[in-house]
Image 1 (spheres, rainbow, N blue to C red):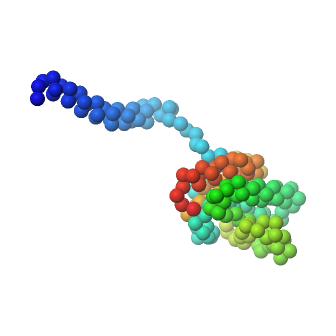
Image 2 (image 1 turned 180 degrees about the vertical axis):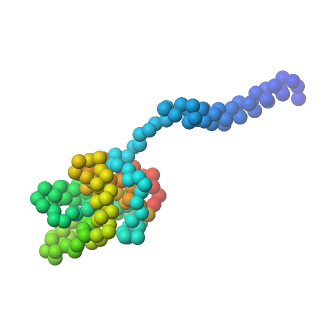
Image 3 (image 1 turned 135 degrees about the vertical axis):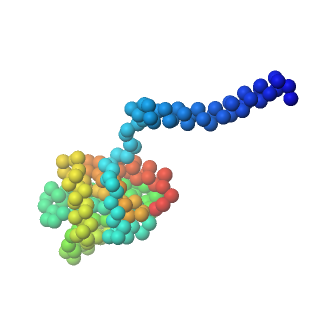
Length: 192
């Protein structure tokens, strides 16, 4: 091998090594010496519940994503109107998911059993809505809602298939923002 061939071989080797190490060195430099250049925003539209709350012991997710809507008692006129709007929107979101609609479950959480007439009316109006009677779960959702940045609190909570409460939405964001988050999560998730 001549000196010229040896020099060319070394250049090629250095070029191959540089393609691997230069990006790592740039990333290292940005992380430690220019942290202000790292994006601080997220792509989710709902509010992230941090830390996520494990409710798998109180809610059987059946391996599906779940939308939980807390129903406070007593639910007067304004509350009932908001709840009806949220129930309608979540049903429309479920339909809008198309082929992924079966990957989503919806539940209405209440502390006491539904009166028979009200429960039957709910089953007729919203056949795929699960009526959940669990005071502890309702208290947990209420506690998260009390930390809300939104004035009226949260009205919909997103639970992943593993039973982790991860996102919360005020009534104003229970339409396209929730749908976009669900589509994104279902696209990147292999579970549920």
